[in-house]
Image (tube, rainbow, N blue to C red; front, side, top):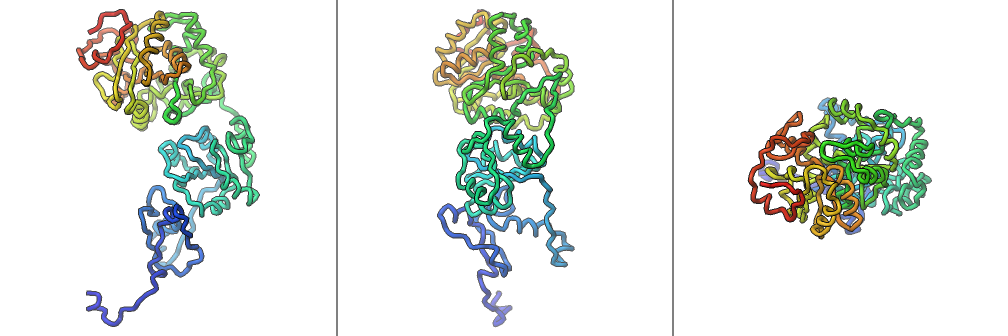
Length: 491
């Protein structure tokens, strides 16, 4: 058809000019194939973006991406007049580059939140895990997955400072910045210039010429440095660390008071006070509520509740540099924004996906019964403890759990007792996570509840007297029980 219509008017054109193929940059870099210099090719009329690395993808490292978006954002009036507008880039006080080979970078999100006036460009040689890709929700973050070596000089020129904040470091990138006489700030990195986050943050603030920010007073004068909920889950997923979570019940016990499901025992109170000040690491993470730092994350009822809690013992005992979030097991009902609860539950389920699991719970808890919370587990065993005052049989409980915990993830739902049990199991080499009232939270999430609804067939969080429960006969649940220490008649 083309020959019939055009005949001898067909002319051969220069292929490189009218079909300039670009898009295989990442593949070529892997095979060390030299890349043509785009900037020296002003005569290209048609750019052909080959491979699946298209410039309109969420993440693309190929050259020409910005050019494509410049044209894609043109108004028709600009196209007609052949105008190409300059991009309106936000003004930042400082531009920083970070390189990582890990899905979780300690303190990175805290930096991003603390310094919205600073642009953070985060690069990696490979695709990025969700723990990093979710950071693109911050306007001062740019992600560069599948980073290509030819971009080193470009990024070194575009950024003011390199932040060496990962243990692996990246010497060739550091050398690029040093060659250009640009500073490198290190925190737990290769140079290890700063030993604390506060020193590192202060140096970054001074580079950006930003005023010193006064630390917020927090709730009732209490301020704890707590990882966000999702970052805490990411940390557990990465390190497979054991976890103990503190809440208002533990704070009462630390002050010498009984709570509905556990009489005060001096030994338990003493251990909780000591554990609250323990420094977390990649083997064991202590979690605290972050209502002290970010009350805006929670409902008005939740905020009003915590305002009435005596936090003197928190000031006295919670002296560690940082904590995980207690609310890893409460990602729904008390959250002001409930839209991310599904993400949190998915992360939680990944903890026991294809794992042999040992659930240690009270006689009325029945966690996972009637829902799919633990469907992904390879197998489930249960040890049943008293639903009230289980610290009274602590030695027997620890011995029985230790017998059954070999090669299993231990999930604890035993109030204050779970905290010290998690620590003792971790010291013995087991992986133990205190997940508290996760089952109630998951049930409320599934039903879309906006208030705390009492469950008919098992224990419900905050309904501590366990009245009027109608247990269903569940053969599957009964078959999972390997030890019953409750001393109570069971269905």
